[in-house]
Image 1 (spheres, helix red, strand yellow):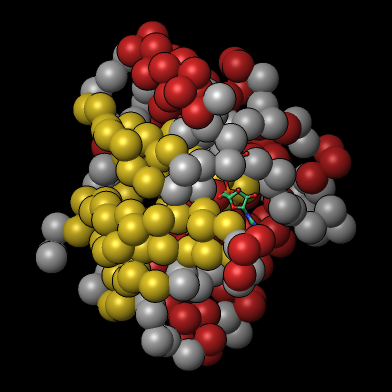
Image 2: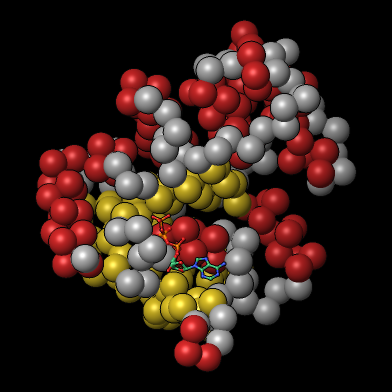
Length: 245
Ligand SMILES: Nc1ncnc2c1ncn2[C@@H]1O[C@H](COP(=O)(O)OP(=O)(O)OP(=O)(O)O)[C@@H](O)[C@H]1O
């Protein structure tokens, strides 16, 4: 158990009830080990975002269990779940979700403010420097490029030093060169700093930065590959999409 940052057991998420209900996740069991980078892929509607939201404690599964940092989330009160998320989990989205009226450093300090702490300026500076934005501390999101905004979002997710970072298409809105910069940064945080990263992506190139790629179809796990090239991953995706049609 100690080497697992996140464990999913028989995770099922159904939306709605009766004949119109949708089973977005159907009995998924998966482990994400400390210091590893996993990409989650699958055709549109296969349950990738639902898996991420349940694993990150942002959504509650219909049945099954999620364990993060040794604590099972099922059954935790909203307050305890919020505290656990703040302490152990970071999340980055495709849309960077920065507050437009705040500077980069104010955005980065936000999670600590929400937890009732004053963000130490040395720590904010250190995290912004880590993502290569030491010189942009006073800029507002509108004064930054897409890649820079995503790096601010990354710094904001990392300021609490989470054990696990979940990314839902974090490079989906970026051009390929900028996307590569963000992926190199993410890869380095896993390899050099022991972060555990779980990233949903449609992009085989982005997935090739991961140690492992897991594939979902119709809410079920259909396989995984280790250390695969972008070409191999694209080939597998093409097959899955052909059978999903
Ligand atoms: N709030 C909701 N209410 C009802 N159905 C939902 C809801 N959210 C997702 N679904 C359904 O659950 C299934 C899985 O959705 P999900 O967003 O997890 O898929 P995805 O693999 O992330 O898709 P995409 O690649 O298109 O983003 C889909 O059939 C979707 O329509």
